[in-house]
Length: 235
Image 1 (cartoon, rainbow, N blue to C red):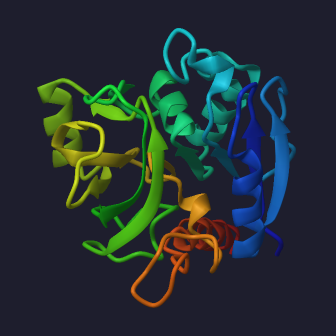
Image 2 (image 1 turned 135 degrees about the vertical axis):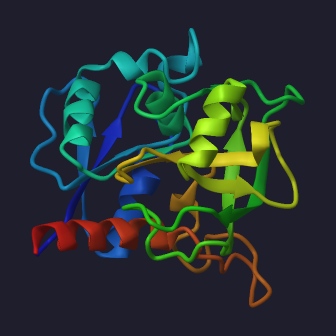
C-alpha cells in the first residue's frame, strides 16, 4: 500500500516543504493540506510543520490551533491517526489541548539554532518505534519559544504515565522543565517535539557526525515509524 502523509500549511509556515520532502525520502506520499480546509483528503497521518504561523501573534501556535483543519485533526486524533507536531506544530498541539502543558519564550530570551542531542524516552509511539528506548540521537533545533512548562502536578503525571517522548541531553537549550523536548499522548498516536527531524533525513543535509560532515539522518526513523504504524493498522 502507498501511505499518504498530509503536511498542513498555515500562514507563516516555514518547514512544510521540508516535511514533505522527508515524507518522500522515507517512502511515503506527501500530501499538501491547507489550514483553511475542512478535509484531510483521505491521508493516513498528519504533520503540523515548523514555522511562525500567523507571525506568532498572541502566543505561538494559538491562532493556528483554531484553524478549520484543526477540527479535522482533533477528530482524526480520536480515531487513532498518527499526528506529528514539529516546533510550531508542537506549539499548536499544546494550544489545541491535544498534548499537556505549554511552550514559552526561551529562558535566555534569544533564538537558538543548534544540532541538539536528544534521548529517546518513549519508543512505543507511532512516530518513535524505529528507535530504541534510551537511544541518543542528534536533531537540528531552532526556536525562540521552545521552553516547555507545566504545573508540578502535570509534570509528575506525564512522567508517571510515560508521556515524555524525548529529553534534551547534554545541554538544555531553552529552559524546558525537566529537560522535556517532546511528548506523546496516552494512546501514542500524537507526538510533538521542538527539534526538527525533517532536517535530518538525507545525507549531505543533516547534522555533522563522526563519519562525515552533514551526514546525520537521525530524523528518518520518525517518518519510517509512522509508515510502519499505518501499515500495521491496515493489515
